[in-house]
Length: 379
Image (cartoon, rainbow, N blue to C red; front, top):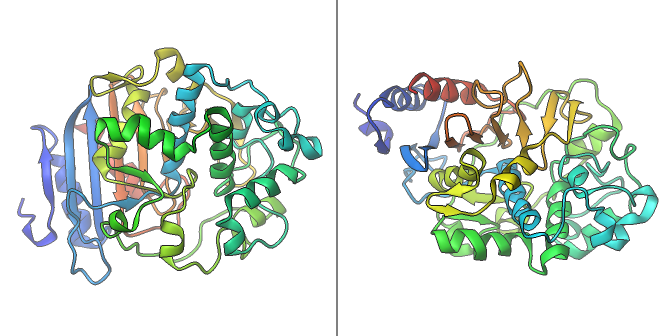
């Protein structure tokens, strides 16, 4: 297939040509504007493709080193980072957050565990009172506000997706346990030694390689609107409001501010598919993988209005309800707009699909299903 007009480049192993054909068709038809897809099996890349454009005006092609902002896909990598702390014995998923962070015990939160906080059960999906852009960008002020806040529902009784505040909770837990920020731990201990182009918050120099996202048309379907949903997503202060991109690009927030190439994002999902192996390096024990992927809670989520199963920061398949791919042990995470990362231990497979053209979906974008079907049809 001629792909020169859509700049689809990279490499694929024999047998995965239908995946390339799908991406090419989507780019030609306008389903996608710029994409990157990487798939590894047994730690070896079988798909590493980039195509389309990194800017709205179509002057800058997506290239191998183009960075995509991956929104909530970052949560899965944040979960990996905390899983490494669990492996080291710095904490456990049963550790009470307040044992690491004493101020967190306020307003009935003393018994909330790390596992509950990472699986969206802490009741802190949004902030009740107006919160400015400057407030959001003040780490200490925001984590102090969350620590002092009364939960929006009884912690541990249900999940309610924390779109932004998950990053503050996970980040402060990681900092209290290790002394370094979560992003610093990931960079110093994993990404730099293994030469992975993944960043939680990005420098101005690396930000110059980032895509220009095309905002979605329309709004996500949240079902009946509740206070929890409103505070999590719909108030003008639910996320840092009115920010110019440069004010936020460098902010380290593991909930939604990761920047990556597809191959680096896929490789960071490999440990979930390969008993803790990333390439030839054991970065997490098999028991550590099992622990982070074990179900913390399942049922109707109070924010997303989907029936979901959460591990300690990842979305899990359930019996009869695959999450990413057909297998019942798949895990992963979707990013606002349509990107996703996933891992399948039954096939030793990891993947990342990253987009510039955003759709108003929160859990399952139609492009995700099409890409996953194409991948699995080639196995």
